[in-house]
Image (cartoon, rainbow, N blue to C red):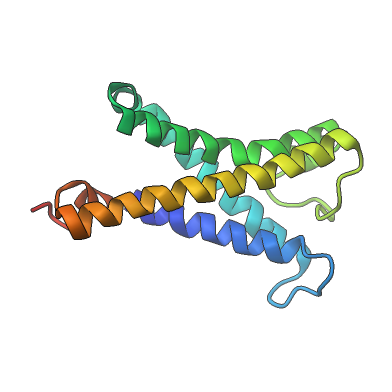
Length: 162
């Protein structure tokens, strides 16, 4: 069930972020700030879930290469929201970095070179993460459809392993 929750939160964060930061078009669903609240909230939830998952399953992650693969993915999922948070702090916008909901308009472009670089890393980490998730999902489907073994059943808690 945690897999599905993280997938839904990541898609929410991705789609709302793409819409919020598309400065060439007017947002269709919510205001730019509303989309950013959604983007930030979903991203923060993913980071907290990833950190919790890393902590709770730390013994599993050290045992095998499969565990290390999962730890790598969760570590990147934690780092993705860290880069823009650090960028906000470096721009001197402390209240924006710590506020759970926007105090005023948070949707803005980076103001200095280092912040711009961190926002660029945010996007690059996301693209790299998308590649890792695609490989991960392909492996899960291979296990389910070709090997017909147990790992895929653990992803969905309502399905009993064969």
